[in-house]
Image (cartoon, rainbow, N blue to C red; front, top):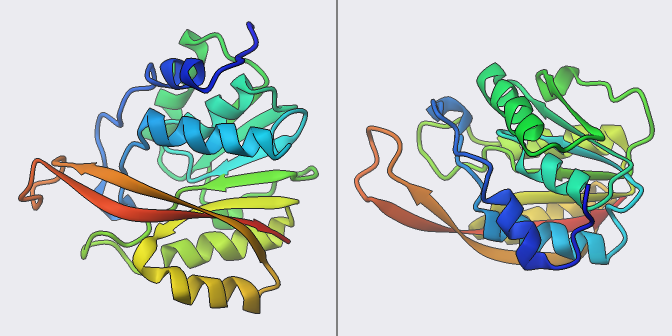
Length: 209
């Protein structure tokens, strides 16, 4: 597999990952745009959080962060998602892209046991942008990440919850080192959506345990 040396090349590879064909509203399934995923992965690589590391992607969806981590030299990358449709598509895509050193597991994150040392976690949980989604799902992901004890965590959240989250992270001995800010596009994919596209302000907190 040819080594990727430019962020733009990574973004171009990630553009081949399709959107979820049957998104489920209760899981708040939205595809992370390749421009956002490539930017975050490129920064994580620059911090030394991917190359030769054991990387886990919780709530991986169709696998964009798992595949990107493998492309950027992870020792191995594991994507975990409760939705079997997402996992099946992620496996198909990784095979087509000829990406190895990764695997996908269908599991509720609450029941997931990696069985090895965890260096880096990426997670893009349901962050509560929709009224029909159960609130607090992102906190459950943080609790699982604390249990797994990675060296570093990257976690997506609504930007409007930043002040609360910084307090929550601090109370749980998570040292926030960086905050990445993105406008996350939400397309019209559910019946209750009234706009063709809407940008949601999100943050990604990089934290050390």
